[in-house]
Amino acid sequence: MAFALGALVAAAVAVLVARPDPSQRKVNELRAADAARDAVQIIELTAAARSSAQRLNPVLEGLATALPINPDEAPALAPASTAAGWREVAQQVAREYDDPPSGATATNIARESFAMALDQLVAAVEAYNSALRTEGALRARLLDLAREQRNLAIRAWAVGATQLDVLNIDAGYGHAHVFLPTGSGTGAFSADPEPEGSHQR
Image (cartoon, rainbow, N blue to C red; front, side, top):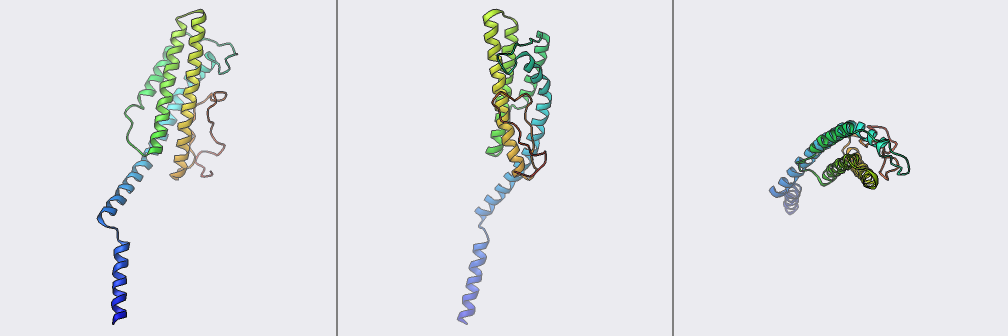
C-alpha cells in the first residue's frame, strides 16, 4: 500500500514538473511567436536586399567608372544628368529602409547595416554632384570624399549581407548572397563560394 501510494505521489510530481506553469507557457508562446515572426522577416529582408542590390547595380557600376576604387586611376566623370539619376535611385532605395519593423537582434543588425550603407551611398552621390559644380583642388577633394563614402557604403552593406547569409542558413533556407557589386578593393567582405540555397557552412 505504501509502495503504491509512493508511486502515485511520484507520478503526480512528475506530471507537475513536466507541465509548465501558466507563466512558463506564456513565455513559450511568446518565444514561438517571435521565432515565427523572425522566420518571415528573414525571407522579407532577403528579398528586399536582393531587389535593392539589383537596382543599385547601375549606380555602382557608374560610380566605379567615375570614381575608380584605385585613387591612382584617372576618373571618367559622368555628366550631371547621369549623376542626378544615380541620386534619385539611391534616395528611393534608402527610403525603403526607413521605419524598420522590430525583429530579433541579429535581423535588426543586418537591416541597420543596409540602411547605413544606403545613407553612405546617398552621401557619396551628393558629394559627387557637388564636385561636378566645382573645379580644381576643391573638385579633387570632393571626388576623394565621394570615393571614400562609396567604399564605406559597400563595406557596410557587406556586413549586413554576411549577417543575412548566416541568418538564412540558421533558419534552414540555405545560403543567400545579396552582396553589392564592385566590392573588390574596398576592404568589404565578399560572398563565400557556396552556391545559393546550399546548406553547407
